[in-house]
Image (cartoon, rainbow, N blue to C red; front, side, top):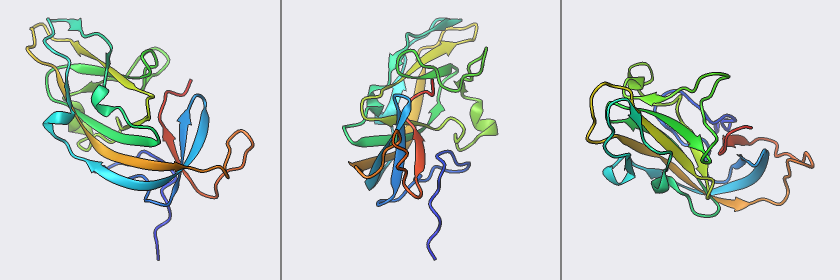
Length: 187
């Protein structure tokens, strides 16, 4: 008997694909869901080419908000990513240059080296990038010493999609089952 499709994107434990080829996703972009059928999935291994180094940071300083160009996706594709902070920094995720993720009313949760103690699989910080809806990060050195490098490693899955004309969020023509993909901040 086949397993029921996962109807939610975040799952504790080691990273897994959120859907299989042939399944429908609703990608949240510009305050609405756009529906696509997944046609192909490929793993993105954790490796040096998928690292971002925000450079040397002086004590108690921050980098500029930096585009994560290595995570940019081609048209009709989205990426599911997790990350690990490799150096003694904290980092804020943005989807769009100004839209912070993991945000509360008065605080923003950050990625740190110590996150792996409570969340060894980095599941809580999972995020998605769709086409050119770019992700950005800002690294912060909150220590009292200078850092020569400030690196974050990424890994995940790449999903190739096909348009589906039969489903439409605005007209409330929804698929019978679909997985929600938050590819931009919910504003």
